[in-house]
Image: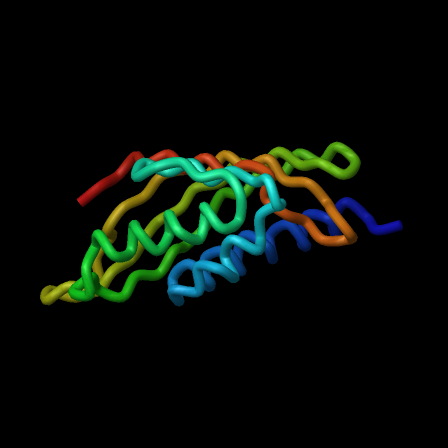
Length: 135
């Protein structure tokens, strides 16, 4: 049996992997962090199922074009409420981008996550992305 601290740390690891994979353009690998029937809800669309999530992520990146500056997602203010094999997670996110003037905040907002532990690993069942700051 693991402690609440270990469970919360494992959830934070999944959240970090999501950012690394999304920023790196590894959309299939990012979608693998969701349950098979997981939902990804963004300002640019909503997708359910891993294949649909990866396709939406690719579409969002394609709409941004190849000229999109390198971006890094930062996640802060993480609050995790554990309930056995489930967790409700709230956090804030900020995207930092390169620009001709130097690094700038590109956008920011909040994540509202419902996570479940399946096969010993935490997965997103539902991730809702709210955008509060847009450039």
